[in-house]
Length: 129
Image (tube, rainbow, N blue to C red; front, side):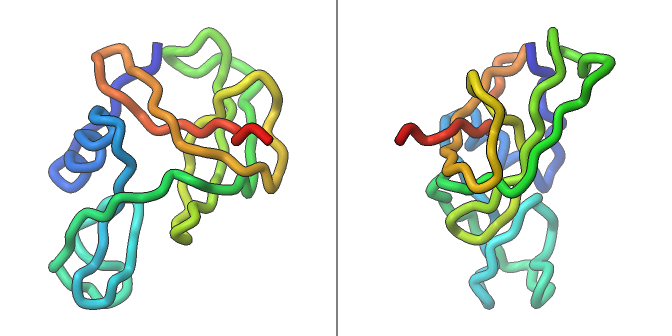
């Protein structure tokens, strides 16, 4: 079973949204920049005025890798790690779920995988043609 995410003051909103099945990111109020991973201030204008924006969850696979040995903690076999670019322009590292291996350029959609402690983490699955 997947281990629980490590929650911090700046990331709690993200993990709480995931547990509700919502996919979100931080948004800077003055400059409208979206960013992930969460942090205290905007990476562009350094403003502390931020809000939470709901994301579409639609993305494209940019890259992927699979650790061969040993299996990652909490998994029978190592998960496939992917880098995706979201429709909104953000890039995110996550896991691939599905029967086949990912291909660069695959259209994917976010889903939420349960963790051992009853929380949820975002993972991506190929969009059916």
